[in-house]
Length: 404
Ligand SMILES: Cc1cc2nc3c(=O)[nH]c(=O)nc-3n(C[C@H](O)[C@H](O)[C@H](O)COP(=O)(O)OP(=O)(O)OC[C@H]3O[C@@H](n4cnc5c(N)ncnc54)[C@H](O)[C@@H]3O)c2cc1C
Image 1: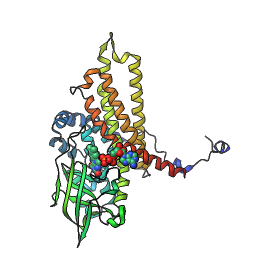
Image 2: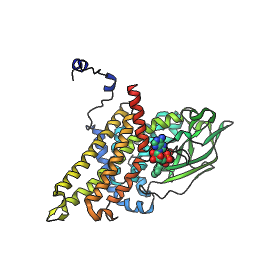
Image 3: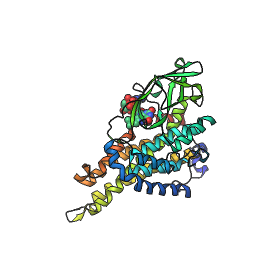
Image 4: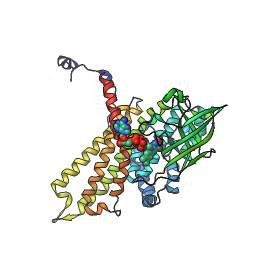
């Protein structure tokens, strides 16, 4: 609309809001497209055959883990100088989406490892820390992001884990809960309060290696979904780490957690749209084959409308996720867009997968078919990296700021 016309209607064109318009939404670069296609093939050929077994055993198959490392999926944005693939954030998002089409649990591993752990180290760590950890995270072991505690979930910055200075070391005591990848992680990024008198401004992030004395990982939780993704409680009992293990600056842990969880939420959005699309892809062919009343069940108009509805909702969610990913690559603030993307993608994935079970009829309710697993795997999206309530609160906070 011409600026003049907008002004005559009393509308003021706020150019700063236009800063959030990214490049065309669905256009990918050649590199992104190649990544998407390569990962889709890898997921189908190398991950899919192991999904049932991993689900049953509640752990990631060694071969699958090795394959992820060998094909660069554990070091997506790590610069090539440190042994990574040197991709952009959009490629990470496409990777998580393609993996989630096949298995939500492996997508959780790939997503959290890349968008929280690697990302924080790439952007905040010292050169020495990068040299020490990035090559291993790209090629050898997974990493965990340890923020949540038994008493500090949505209110994460009320955490009670402390890091007390002792000479040139810190001694960490406390308990972390619901920590993804912790069954297999080689390093833990631990958020602990190193100056409790300063409140959340004392929260500091530490590298803690798995073999550090005093660190113990409990057995994985038995969960509703993403069963192969190990989620454990971790105890820190006088865990001594040198001062050089502080990641970034002392007292900045709360900023790192808040900032990087924004990017992480776009990753969870990608996991959710992948799960929903994988489920839909496994469902539509069945509706075209299954005959009732002399016709395939897809041919009933009420079925078609419901299928069209969920496909449209899924496309909306995907566009929010891709838009937020483009903004991350453009180094824009994505607090609102990431919260919107995660909220819509996770709520949509729940609806799409539940509807797919309906479209299948009775067989959709059995473990013979994959729909019930997609449905169970989608539930985590409304909980981790901030519940749907917390996303709504974040969105409202951003809107208030925008208009104040
Ligand atoms: C499988 C899994 C993997 C996880 N992985 C990790 C990980 O790798 N690292 C990590 O640090 N954490 C991880 N988490 C923790 C996760 O981020 C938290 O579970 C989540 O933030 C919610 O915290 P909570 O479980 O304590 O719920 P609570 O905070 O106790 O929330 C309970 C209910 O109260 C609502 N609520 C709370 N406060 C408010 C409010 N102010 N306004 C409105 N509603 C509110 C919530 O929306 C929710 O419905 C994981 C959790 C799970 C289940």
